[in-house]
Amino acid sequence: MNEEDVLGPLELRLGRLLFAGVISSALCLGAGLVLWVAGGPSPAANTILTTGLVILMLTPLARVVTSIVVYVRMRDWFFVGTTVAVFVVLLVAWVLKEL
Amino acid sequence: MSLTVIAAVAAAGAIAGGLGSLLGIGGGVFLVPLLHAGLGLDFKVAAATGLMTVIATSSVVSAGTAGRNLINLRLGMLLEVASAVGGLAAGITVERLSNDTLSLMFAVVTAAIAVLMVSRLDKRNVLEASADPGPLGGRFHDEDSGREIVYRVRRLPVAMFASLLAGAVSGTLGIGGGILKVPILNAWCGVPIRAAAATSALMIGVTAAASAPQYFARGEIHPPVAAAAVLGVLLGSRAGLQAGGRARVKWLKLLMAVVLAAVSVLYFKRSLA
Figure 1: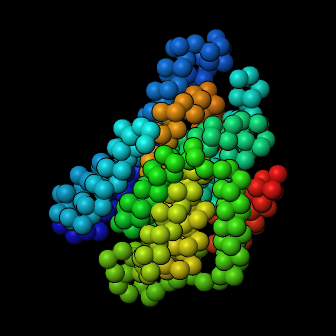
Figure 2: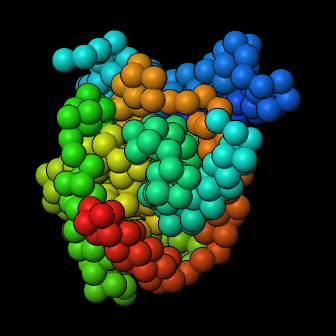
């Protein structure tokens, strides 16, 4: 497969993925904020807001995972390697506590 | 946390997001001082909020530029290895660093980049349309000149080091770090400013995602504050992106240099205070 035929659609696909992530996050943040403003701080408002923030933080991770899949299909091992390296760093960021 | 503060945070987010996407930087560089110096939030909370808005800006701007071939996915992914490591290291170690020292370093770096931008206003880093961009270069259609732009990436180690540094600064100060990468990619590595900005905009989301979970685990992300800032930034960055497509490259660079100089003065003052 020609690489330009793959990277162009990949860019669009990643764009749609990022858009979906940020929209679902924004919906949670908007709903949570309305609840927080209308009813004051509550566990429900806090849960919805936190869900929105976690979705936001996971969106770049989802983008990296999609890239890994595409580079594997292209059999472009160098970029599979770099993408996996980025993925590992992002995972470490979630699991690592105090040093 | 009062309603007034939440409304002010949303307004600060809208301003920062608009300027940020117009300049191809995260906007955190405006938001963090607004939240910290302006609204009196704790610096770490301001930085954590900044990181959340950086992820949002990055996603929205990248979704908007996708399909125009401006984003260099290969170069971006390679540089993200360095910037994510820098972000992660900063997210872990930021607790132990003095804010005065970091403010001073940041002031020096932004001042240097402002000078670099002004001295290179007319450089375009463009090859003939038939040229081979090499394994990491790229080509895209430039809306200003109506021409096909081809470029090759030079001095990759410099770009990697700049990304590592940008990642570390991003994770420490809660800014995108595009403010450090874009001028270096443009001035020293041969990447045209539009492509450098679009690639950087994609990268800063991953960079911020490498340090944000650390702030989150320490409880430095305040949900209502972060939500107000993110929503403000999302609205502002949409407006900035639409204006950015029409702005002239030269004006974009000049505007960026002026903004960098202003940021530098602000941080010098903060480090001396």
